[in-house]
Image (cartoon, rainbow over all chains, first blue to last red; front, side, top):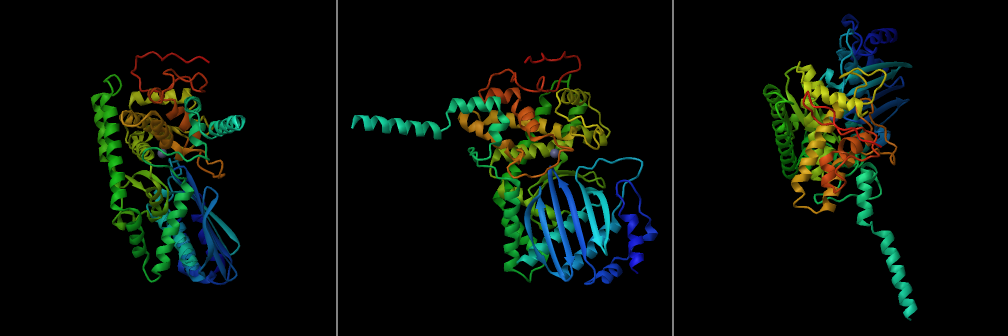
Amino acid sequence: MKAIFFYALIPFLIPACTTSPEKENHLHPTASVQTTSGTYDSSIEIEYNLGRDHYRYFANQKDQLASAQTLLGGKILAQGTVDVFEYQRFLKNAVSFIQSSQPAQSSSKPFCRNAFKMVLNTQGQNYVLHGCRNSNPGALSRLIKQGEFLLLYSKS
Amino acid sequence: MKKQVFFFTLLLMSVLFLTTEPRSLHHEELCQRFYQSTCYKKVEIQDPTGTVRSDIEGEKATLRIYQEILEQHRNWSEQEIDEAFIHQIYTPEQNERIRAAYSWVQNSIVHFIDQQPSSIFSKTEKTILKTRLQKTKLQLPPPGSLYMDEPDLLTKNEAHYQRLSSSSEMRLRVGGAYVYIAKSWFNLVATLAHELSHSIDPCELRIANVWIPAYQRLTQCFLENNLIALHKNRFECGSHDQLSEVFADWMAAQIITETLAFYATEFDRHQILNAARNSVRDLCDPEDDHLEFDLEFHPSPKIRIQNIVGEHPKLRTLLGCSAGPDPRSKTKRYCMLTPLDQPDLPVRTK
Ligand SMILES: [Zn+2]
């Protein structure tokens, strides 16, 4: 099951602007996260540009503890421990997001005003996705909002 | 006793001299070093309409508000929390203010285009540009559902122009942190002018298959004056290209200048100076904060503030600076729209 998870994820984690995903290799997100739940360390990092500002969101789980932080231009906006169950839900959505990212045609390099980079680490493996905020309207924004909500909710 | 009074007076005068900024020196500094004068961090600049706070302050403040709502209503859904947040940030007064600024900016850019002679923009070109400007809609919540496809914007210190590839809809949205801290009217005008100008920037027009010769001459001027960084991997309107951002800054400079000219009869010279500085203060290099920001598509803060805005000839005149260009500037001349046959303007000499 672990191996299936790794190999299935690889096609989606190559830079989205230059490659096409192979649909038949789609990973089933629920199954993978259930496997990792509470068992493996994991982390999700999203770096993105909005206008001239550079943002970074980072959340991770180590043993049974999860934490997150959100930064603007390298400065911390908020940070703290987060609910492990909610973190797992977020991880699951991050995996779904990677799967559903629509890469551009490899023949051209599209103009991307608001680029992002996402790094998912789970079960000791790193996966990197480069993309454009507008290529899947709303998807990245919702994921970031969910991450920030998770952080603020846990802090309160 | 007389001696004591004399020394006390001398001391008082020295203190006054050291603590008050001599108007003439301050003014001279602004003329020659608009960037430094604008970005000097330790002094908050008060224009007649307000001040400008940093991006990070705005975002921290709005996240705190969001968290307070969460603490008070832990059983609420995310949607309910968003609505309460929007109610607190996007107040009718704030939205009205932003709408008024947007309308001012939209009309000002349309007016700027209309004013150009036919040797710069043909009638058809003017129609295309004005239509795009007028089709770009300002979207401000409530309702919260308006930003459902971009919910993270609610706590961001951003205003941004977007064109949806699916529907060709053009829209301008303003993040909650910006709404919360946008106090200076002049900063609001400059920010919205920059964003709305993206709807008619050369790269957006290229996507719409529109080629305007006057734009090509303007682009050439930007390149010759090093306003656009010549990155080795630069691909015009693609990666490592600053054309669309330089154009948006340049157009915003025209609008800031016209706005300040309008208020020049109402405000005194010092107020106009501060309004000019506040209009671009949020573009300052946050070196005190050691913040990282994009330089792939955006020129450096110094180019944006000093060369694109601060060296606008009409702005310099308004600020009481010498009418001619600053001889110490790195640029050869200030870029303006020119007709095809117009010879180059005199190159400034060092
Ligand atoms: Zn811009």
